[in-house]
Length: 450
Image (cartoon, rainbow, N blue to C red; front, side, top):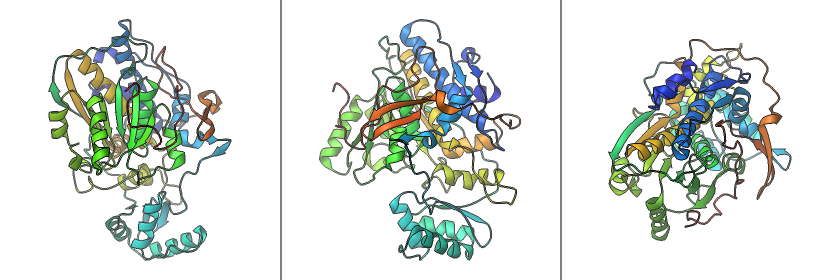
């Protein structure tokens, strides 16, 4: 096991005697100034090892082989770029999302969603009129005259998304926090050849790390139900890419009838994955204290963008913005000084596999010791791990193998899909999902068989 994988496995509380049971093969395929290939393979490796550990528990046999292929990891970490719907790629970043020169540096914006685009333009006094090319020209002109931090604060105050590009800095944000929420009698799991078979996962997450985690749990056999607010529509491409292996429904928790339905789902859930800002869902009784009291055996995984402490904890964020705000964009800058990006949305994907690994380890602990865990992760924590050097130095990768061997095709309600297989590699566990994405929000709010 390499240093990064060992470090992540230790953070997950994994048994040290299992640490050497990962074989790494293939050629790293993510070129970067930072050790992003090492981060990617480590997060997939520990997720695979956690799945193997739970698989052993449920079969009563030996630990299955874990063999992670770096080519599969590179393709999976760029899954959105490989996705084809009836032969067509999905849109990635909108015209108003990107790096812009400011009066004293650079700003990164995120305007993929219509409400974020509208708030960005309104905060800067730019009328939302004309075509995209005209709006790009006006945004370029306005931002060039303003200090980056002023833009950041004004846009955030209006509910938009902009971050001043910052130099790399040290951070003590942990990769993972695990808290024991209580101990009951162990909850043995029935025998199964899939690690998460029969387990119910309530998925309250959005772009991208949370859905990557729950997509992975669905691959491993869990019954995953994603719940969104009816008015907070997901982008089709993002939903397709991360919607494999799960179902999707809509509930308004403010509505008494929908709230009662949600509470019924929660009572029968084994796992709750939350991907909203700290405190955003507390009013619905989803804070840690309330959940410990109401559901003492529930495994809870929380995700946020900027970490769980400090003035930025409550801010909205995406992978691209965290890269800009933590110094990754500067570390990856071009020769001319323009900020750069990682070769994948590695904070999202890497954190997603860590969340899945943490949930699998928590389920193993619940089944063997009765301990129930609440875990917390953040994109900022994964960024700090990367910037801190998950290995002693970055490794320049050779040209990756062609991606076709790690792609699959399947029909879906959206059309014929060509998509990345899962990189999670446990002997006897499939690398593709048994169900394609359903259309967003169209499934019944009930558990399979319930």
